[in-house]
Image (cartoon, rainbow, N blue to C red; front, side, top):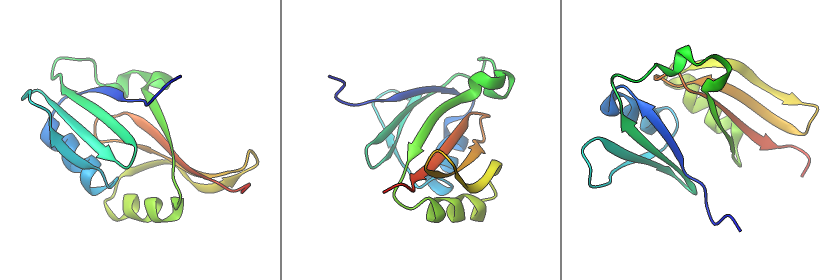
Length: 121
């Protein structure tokens, strides 16, 4: 049984990343006892971000820069928040034949995320 999931990401600047996740995606940012790490929290989603200024930028990972698909209850509200904070949308909001209304974005660190809502309910 998987009890929960956590994402672990390398980011070049924790302050810059934290501001993006807080403002554009609605997460809260928490200290976790190590100055090189933060926890980004939104509902049941947890992202541990470690400051790795020397790591390969996520933007250079190509298709491997996707790290998550967040299923939400109001994708339109998430899309509006992302747009209001000028985040880079890489797939516009639309209904898909597989029963999701979704969009894709690229974080300030170059990681890609899909955000969607079930439409088959």
